[in-house]
Length: 306
Image (cartoon, helix red, strand yellow):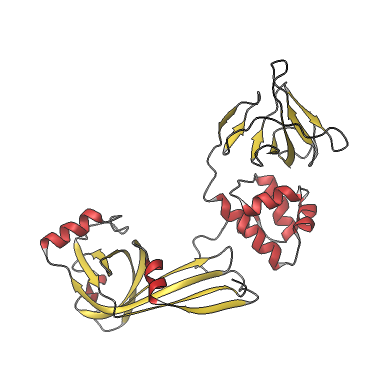
């Protein structure tokens, strides 16, 4: 069996008079057109990986018409007989690949049709990749990277060990201040932020900490002899941010206020009981420090049309 992009794959039911399924072949795993194929089913608009069996055949572009068929649940993989099995989990968040593809395509001023043509794929599949979680194979990523003048590593989010924000700036950014309510929403309940403190010799130090938000206070655990413990009983700054590498946008929140050690035994037990995580740094870190912000400010960078 051999197919081209855009051909129709039809799976016949073994039972006489039974239902059939059809879909557009939107991805090839082999250059010679042999199976398996990525197929967008006409009944669900879902894309699945298909290993055609003896009950399947290909209608080339100049033949056949769509055939109605029963629905197959999403997030499944088509087997040789047309039955379904759970789709294997892809590495990382596959939705980010599509977002990086879309961002790079727009940055280069290319339409979907132009990009799909360069990458030898269906414009419909490219739309699916950009708009929905998808897990393209290596051959597809190679063709997309070549079409966009970038690398597979960049489309996959390579450089995770490098500082964030190394991508291109937005062509028309919008920079705006956030109100306190938006800042509290972005702080949410927990995460990783940074505290700015003065070390014992007086030099400034910025330290990352796992934090929780409890009753409007920002709290974190540390060891009594740590640098972070120096934040206690003084006014400090706490900062948390998020950078969206795929879309070249992000936000930051800055909280300033007095920090103090939590000494009440019941309060300590409550904090430990509801903590979302132990400190990532490990070790004995049972000293809780609470920051009660008196100043809460934030900034966000987005495209100008958002």
